[in-house]
Length: 329
Image 1 (tube, helix red, strand yellow):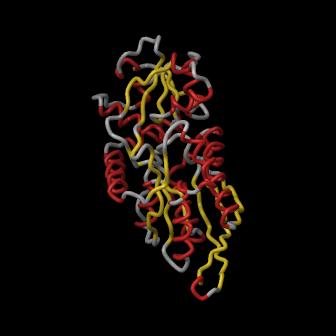
Image 2 (cartoon, rainbow, N blue to C red):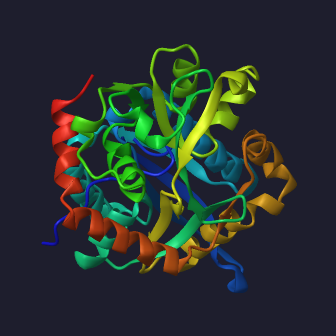
Image 3 (cartoon, helix red, strand yellow):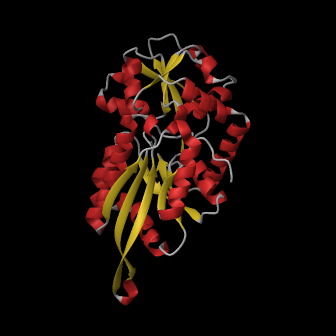
């Protein structure tokens, strides 16, 4: 069996528990014949319990809002079920998602490593839907510091008390430091890693002086500013990655008997930004950034796999496992 990747994570508010959503979709599979067939689509959304309660709530709220809008407009019937997992055992989580998807899943929210694990395990899976933010399928991640603090450049944060997503962020932090010529395990570089529920909470903790630095996505400060405009007077972007990574998770589908129902689901999601009934859903996020659902970029997915392979070859995967297990706060 192919060795699974460690979950690197992308956006901090995305995915933490295995949330099993059974979508009973009333889909007209025989429209031309005037016969309406009800097709049940099972959608798996991967989330992990040690990612923070705030992150879990935000992500669930986003997905639930979208699916309920589809339910109201197109008659989808949604029944969520949660199977809680622990991110400290990421390899097992990847295996678990693949097993669940193979046995009963039709659609799944996945990370790159999940997708390739499924493919290499012989599951007939294909990319279905992705996210695009500000016109790009890629997202940069940044270190934040206080404006009145001593940190002027990235190397200054050696020994700092940092807030991040822990296991989710480890490989991304390692990558950004490596880009700047800093190649050492985070255990020796940082003084301490404080677990804080989500990106916005991390920014406020930084503004209050509870931590020295925060590592998060590039629009975290904008999200915090919505709650308190004064935070931008106290917090700054210290350093961002030179190149964005694929926005994760993206949505995949199992190829098979339900292709027509899955295609309709896909088209509804891809065109949702054009629909006036979905305006409130998108307006929730356009205050921070402009996003929409798009056709997955195959090149970006393949590039992400090459990056993950490189991280594993450098041994960062094992570092992250040890750091998360031994370094929890």
